[in-house]
Image (cartoon, rainbow, N blue to C red):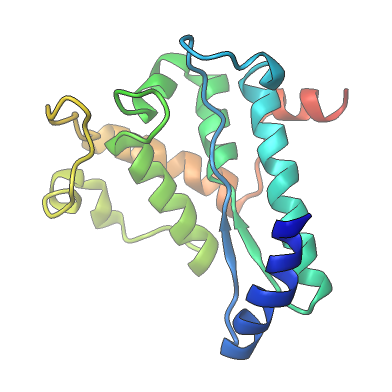
Length: 178
């Protein structure tokens, strides 16, 4: 594959030369009824395809001496899909693909935990302060709701389970065993 060649021969030397630890941001499976996603089967299968791809790239980097980490944001999204489907819908913006402020906060917590081996400061649960300086991405121009403090605590708990404790959603394990 051209991309694995570029990763191993172009990017890996730069990463190694800088002494950095590559962080691969595993994205999430999503489902949009207005597109043909039949090859993706369902959200757990889509997530499995993403997982396999990110682990493939991590392996490419490992073979040339890098020590990458994967930020399992997609697995965190899948936990919520599995355990709290109505809340899972809150993770997406108007286009049902890009993350909403809820999804952005979850992704940030997972990435932070992956990099630092602990959650971000608990003060980040006050999301109105966290998002006060952020740019918004709304197709309609209407602001999207921010996570409440209670929702932020829930999202932090999901990030902790997945990024720090290695929790794997049951639906993912079911797809993996097929």
